[in-house]
Length: 361
Ligand SMILES: *Cc1c(COP(=O)(O)O)cnc(C)c1O
Image (cartoon, rainbow, N blue to C red; front, side, top):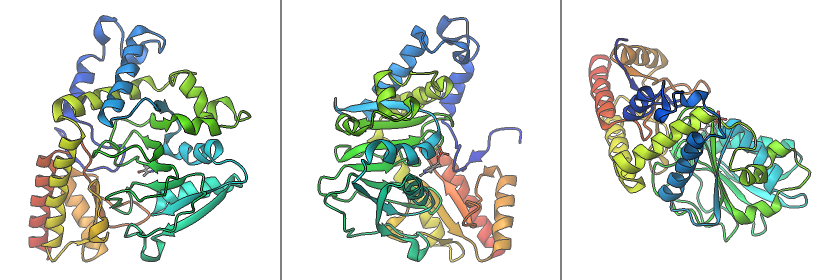
């Protein structure tokens, strides 16, 4: 490849081009420091401004009130699968989990492996996780309800969040954080690995409500306690500085260039509608998620057979369209169309799909 491709990778995923250009421009000399941001102390005023600005932007974009703390942790979303029950599920209590796919299954397994009481109150496993469950019988006394807002591998997404009757919601939003406005008030904790919709791998955004911190047991290892990171502004030890810096620039782009979450949702809806229409009207491609559960971020589809799928992925790349292979656990094809994916990229994909179907259908 001579130039950049249209990148449909599921994660790590495409970043906004203006962000990459800004990083490139200030890589050797960050704001007159004479150093790269990757070479500066995390205790310096330069990095302090970066993390403060990133935090302020998260708060503004999601309209967080004073009771929420914004943290940047390491260990990916996967470490949260174990930190959440460790910190927030007291012995003698039980938590409700909704199983909507691979990542939810892993979250459940991590909670259970600590001997915690976990109740799977709904699951879509009966139909290969192709839908989001409805009319869920939540437990009134649950410590929290855990769900995965967007199922990156199966291509489903919660269009709206269920009423848990006041039990705090906890959500893995790794693949749809900042893709639409949400009402944060029912959430006790939100987490997201950065590498889908926020920045590069290496940082995990955690948003935690003040009242949840009262549950954190004193005896936990320092590095596994949310309170450690709340008390030290995510800098008890060296944070993932470069990842946080990139996140800051992505959030600036989202706020100042795009115009916020209402705007990005509009754009995301146009992109997804264009792609799903191309699938539905083709008579060649077949979407794998039930229509009302479809994700606006990860569009999963099949071709008439596996040989054609391999050929599709290969020829797409030859035409500058990358990352279209489905997750290894499910096969098929997947186009991830996160915030940084342009309408132009989706249009190029739709044009290629029409041409491919015409030649091979
Ligand atoms: C990618 C992904 C994960 C895993 O994230 P890591 O940062 O690699 O641990 C977890 N949940 C969801 C929904 C994901 O998309």
